[in-house]
Image 1 (cartoon, rainbow, N blue to C red):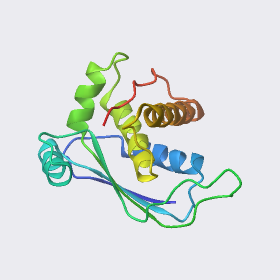
Image 2: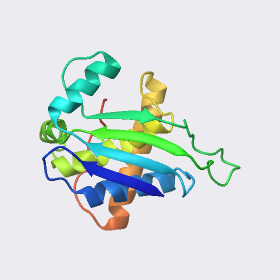
Image 3: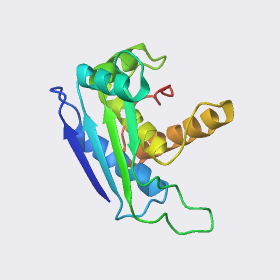
Image 4: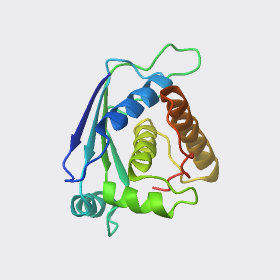
Length: 165
């Protein structure tokens, strides 16, 4: 799996954890190991510009996903998805820090960025949360991936509340 993490935010973040959880999520979703993903960490001003340009919404958001080859998880009877370019995930640590503090189960900025990375991966794979059934599926999968990764890595901390991006 080729995953690049590029921190342009000026904020120190746990880039290794972002890389690790992205790799874990893609493996769990049975995405081809030669697929490519880019994760970019930006400041609030850059995120606001992207949010306005692509969503026509004001203010910075926590995560945005830009799919490339529109890869999807393989069907149950398939081994893995075809190889391809997944796309880009853009994260904003300033928004993540605020959300972590405001969440019912308060957590750190880095824990929120880990959750947002999984959220972004799922969006790249075609998951959405516009409808109640889609939301239940996506957030359930998101929680299972985050919890599984934390258990495997021996990390502690509460399961973050689902992101509503």
